[in-house]
Image (cartoon, rainbow, N blue to C red):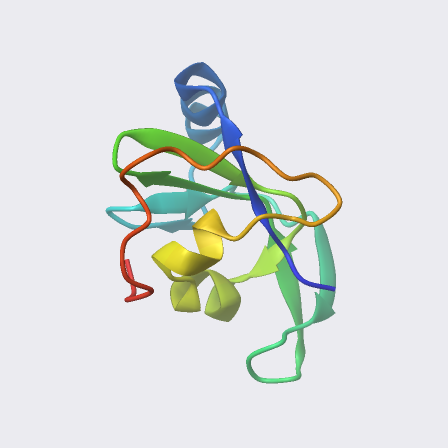
Length: 103
């Protein structure tokens, strides 16, 4: 099942960042420090812990709609963040539809 990102407020982003030490922290985002579940990773097909993910892109904040493994989080691109969930579309923010290169 694909994981999408949805916009969230800066307050929500900071609340989740300050809840506990992140499991992963990068210049573009973080994964909440406690695993949400364990599931098969779409990158390496092994069962791994999966976490809630939060990213920041061009001053906007986003949260994952489902848990991600660490390899999946490290592999996300701008295009992945901006890809709309067909079940819950959101209006893309003008000017941030950049290339699909990595964060």
